Length: 109
Image 1 (cartoon, rainbow, N blue to C red):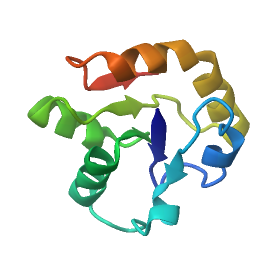
Image 2: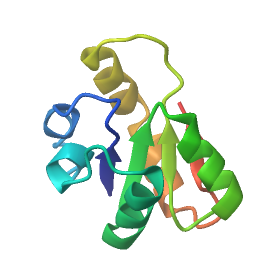
Image 3: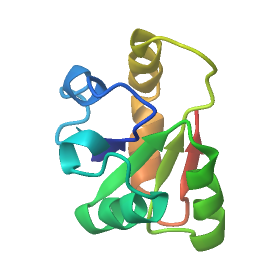
Image 4: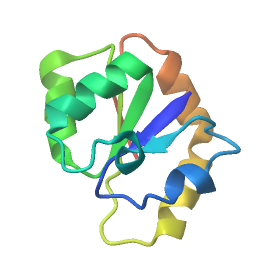
C-alpha cells in the first residue's frame, strides 16, 4: 500500500516511512506540486495511492465521490514531522485495514 503525501506535509515523510509504507511518495516528487486537488485525486486513483493530507478539501471530495479513491485525513494542528511519522506508525494496522475495505474512502487520524 502506497501513500501519497500532499503538499502541506513534509516531503521527507515517504522516506521516513518507507519500511512500513513502501512505494509511497510526495506530490512534489510526482510532478504534482501546486496542482489542483482534482488532478492529485485522479493521479492517486490511477496509480494506486492513498492520499494523506491535512486538507479538508479531500474529505469533501471523498464524501462527494466515495471509493475507490482513499484519503487519510490528519486532524492534527501544528505538529512536527516526527509527530506525523509517529502517528502514522501507530496507526499502521488501521491504515492497512482501511486500504482493503472497498466501502470506506476516508480514515480520520
